Length: 481
Image 1 (cartoon, rainbow, N blue to C red):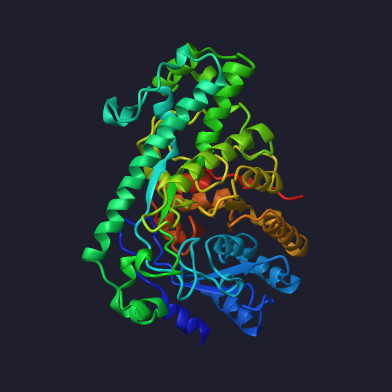
Image 2: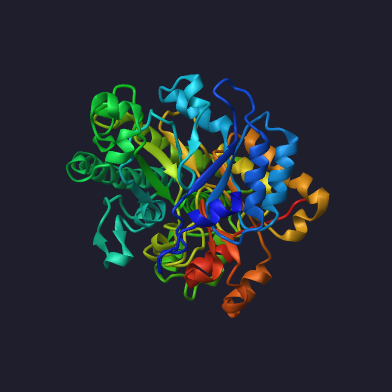
């Protein structure tokens, strides 16, 4: 019966949408409003019902917390090992403090639900969300080293004039220029968001949803009118930032190669970047082999923390008109692919037009010390001390052999416990062989049912664009044990 319900909910994706899910989510696990573990028999029935179906949604999400029973965690690991990317995991140890910081009571915060990719909702407390503003970290990096100009715009002065890097004698000069470019992008994204907040109530309405919402009915207003009309409501319209790992690795490469070791001069680096590395492979190899985010290198991870803190301070100083926060999220869906297409070569060794790093994960293939080191880096690079700090997305990929058998299940459980203890927001897994993905590219007809995890949702691999397929193949294949 449960499987029949799920088949009924499965949508037909429109062509050309990169397998985009419609996010019919099913949330299990977590805690009751009294703080007790909420696992019950239905939890297992729902998870079991997804295992036999080769469909991409509805999507099960499991809320994990410090007291999640081993039995449930074991079963979750077994379902993940099926290789369809189900279920995604969200962490009570991060989401609940987030809601408390934004005005919810403890009972309310304990009763949150999944809503979308890695998003969540409080019933009868949250209004409708206005479409995100956002920035491309890759463009901020490009403009830092090209004096505010973007190659894709034929060197139009899109950003600020922050000077010729050849004149910079300290890494602080690099950092200050990057922050100015970042703030310039953030300021314009917030202007866009303020306009959207004002205009949306004039053109959009959700009467059916509003009739089912206690606050909307009490105020006799549509949910699209947002927080200023709903005392005590939460309006989590947010600010998206994409390509974090690309930015961290680019700044780390410059610090290491130009200032710390002096292995490169500014002329060598800037000339190679401008040529998109053509004829400068030795320089590119130095950049590729510079210290990288995702390997538990404290000073590299700290660059990520400082980036987030800078943006969060900016958002904290510029709230919405009704003094609710703009949230900083890093949930790219698949925007790290098209945004990469309009971003020139970056100092981390990435060529022009290639995808950016996704979510808060390390750049593709650059985290070399295993999943615990990668998760530790991600945790150290997050600035959690702000009410504006919203959700982050993490993808991890393992080969089936790495998690085979009962020993593999236990290893995967340990990874999940570590992720929970580090207070990450979200994690999801691809359990796939690289060889399988390459074979599916060559002969898609034989792999019509191959499901992969994209970014908060799953999709059929053969329906994705060539670049999106390449991005999934390039993700680091982590090793356990």
